Length: 440
Figure (spheres, helix red, strand yellow):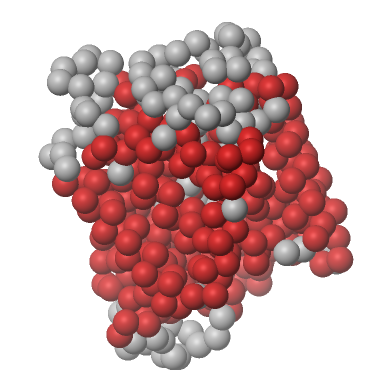
């Protein structure tokens, strides 16, 4: 699920951005390694928190336990109304654009195809966790195959034309200094985006102490290696030359070098497969937060229902699909996501920082303890703070508007949220989704 969630439309564009901003393989691999290491530190913190509080909701539960119900409500407000449906809409439109490119369909069909794609991938989530798991395994396997094909094709081309492969002089215009570093760090951070969503499903995981660290840490490590391999394939295919123009142009040049005239459609098909997994994973994980909020009485009680036999939250999934479809129809989802990305990053860091505020259990065989504490959370907060500063300097207007809109959750919490903060209610494993809703 981590691989399927993280590797989406950026499987090609993010390494392209990296190569174009830093202008070489060595610096690109260094950025991948550093951001990957810092993301691993965050994954260690989330692994501990999910085993301490194995309940639906992920960051929502961690924030509630550490900072109280109002902070958790603001996080849920942001996720429910903008972040989750916005990401779903973005993935749907990305899938539609590349699907139309692969089939030769008109761009005017983008919105209808995107809505149809969101609905189609919501069906396995509604059908249950077994159907969803099969889909995620297939897409994750397909993504690994795509990476293998790209790397093998790059090595084959380098072998066929070793002189070109050794040409690392570079051409075109690339950013330098702080501009290059900022662009590369932001691109790399968002390439890793989504691994934390697995925390929303902690209640449904068997043996969280064993499973969650392997899934989170192992998934982030695998994704780091995959992005590094794709960067290597790009260098081998282009002879180390960084072309001028857009990222899409660079990707097209890579495709043409690797696959010839069939590149455009073949790469489009690869992107469709990659985005399919991310869309499916998002539709599976996001509704678990709505269930948790409904249990706490801050969302309509009807959405607290969960089919524990199938492992599905159909009503909550329908809400996510409906909101995403509205964003797709309005065509403003990219702007909305831009406004809320810094706030999302802020709450990600805050939820992971719960590990500093909450007392750690001395010895509990059910709980995974992040090694070298508090070093992992310190490293992860460095990454979060760096991304926030880069956004504040590069996009101050969007950052300010996003923070203001998220802050509207504070007065909303006074109206919708119960007065108690419920701190400490989620210690240990609680009722499964099919049991009596807690706090309702």
